[in-house]
Image (cartoon, rainbow, N blue to C red; front, side):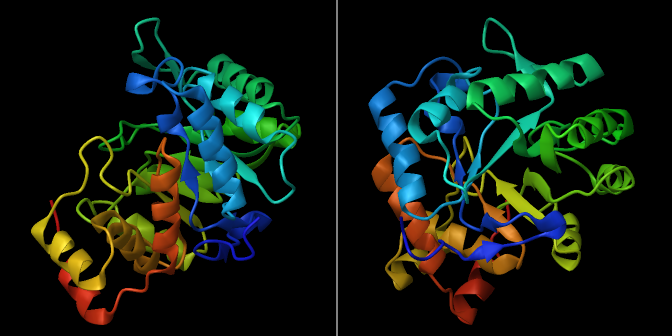
Length: 288
């Protein structure tokens, strides 16, 4: 086990402590986030290496695979270290063809929580995020009923903490009237900053803001300025993009994904990269 938590640790509201540099497990499943991994042994090795590097924050969902990623996590890491927090999400299911189907009715949400518990081998889930909108944008549909279902499961002891994913500021405020929100997981990265105001609000209120697709997701970040700054700092563009996010807000947590041990180590090393002011100023001009 590494002696230093990568990126430091963050304790947002409701008493949860997360390593700011986490690991997103989505890429451990097959193509299209569907089916088994191409290399099962490598997938297990990545999970074990993440924990050995000091990561205490793994992001997953039972709709990755489906069930495949959660079962890999269980095989690789169960019984789990006391300081490891697994953050999962509900709000969708997968079709037989790999399609993503919204599943936000009370029975569906309850079933998804129980599926996550079963496949992770847990009696209670550390954090469950309610996934609402599409990846690229949130909706303005009310979330009170859906979040209330998760709040009831929290009162039953099946969930310890609650979060939100793909939500607007209005939905964020509505959910907080029902139960504490410890994390928001929205699209935000160097080139996509439409969620800036919510990121700042989370920072002001000590709520973890988990930037998903921190490296651009299925369309990796590519920009001349990013490449130039990275070359000057003797770092990879990916490391610079991750370091920029960590310095962007005191409550930002990252969940970059990879199916490669070498790439995982490169991502974790970004937590030690301190960007000088002139580099930050250059990078702040990068927008898509």
